[in-house]
Image 1 (cartoon, rainbow, N blue to C red):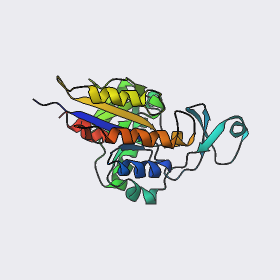
Image 2: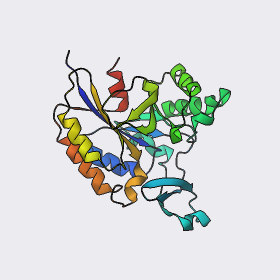
Image 3: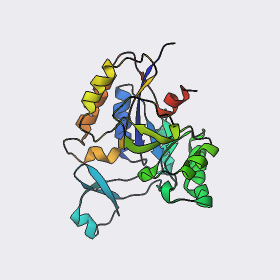
Image 4: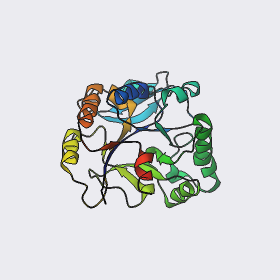
Length: 249
C-alpha cells in the first residue's frame, strides 16, 4: 500500500481579507477550507490585538477599548458575494454567531450549529461536512451533535507540530497556527518526512486579519513566502480539510 502526504489550510470567520488570501492561494495552486458564521455575514468591526494575538472584537465605531488596543479591520464578507468569492474552496461551519460550543447545551445546538449548517448549505448549494470550533469551544455533547448532523471532522485551535491525522477527526488539531515562528522549518521537516507506515498531514490554520498586523510573524509577505515554499514541494497533495479526511474513508 502506498501512503500519501497532504497539505491543507483553514481560515476562520469569512473575512474580507480572505479575498486576498484566495488570490495568493490560486497563484500557487493551493487549496483551503474557509470556516464561516452564517449569522454574521456582512458584519463590520475591528479586531483589537496585543502583539500577534487578536484578543477582542471591537465595534466599527471607536470606544474606550479601541483607544487602548492596536487594531485592524475584521469586516465579514456580505452574503451576496460569498458564492463568487469562495468558488472552488471548501466551506465549513463555525457557529451561527461564532458560538462557543463549550457553553451550548441541549436544544441551543439547533441554532448554534444546526441553523448555521442549514444556511451554509442553502447559500453554497452543497453538503457541509466540516466544522471549526469557534474560540476552541469543544465538548462531548458538541461532538455527538456534529456527528448526528453529518460532520466528518471538526478543527480545534490547539496545534501539534506533527504530521499525524487525528485518531478522532472531531478533535482535529492542526500542525500549526499561521502566527507561529517555526513554519518554514515545519515545511522543511515535512518535505523530508516519508509516509512509510501511514499518510501524513501538514495543516495550517489562522485568521485573515492576522496578516494585517504587520508584525514579524503576522504579515502578508510571510504568508506568500510560505505558499511559495509549499508550492515547491514534490509528491504532495494540496487539498481541503474535507478532501484530506475523505481520503481516510
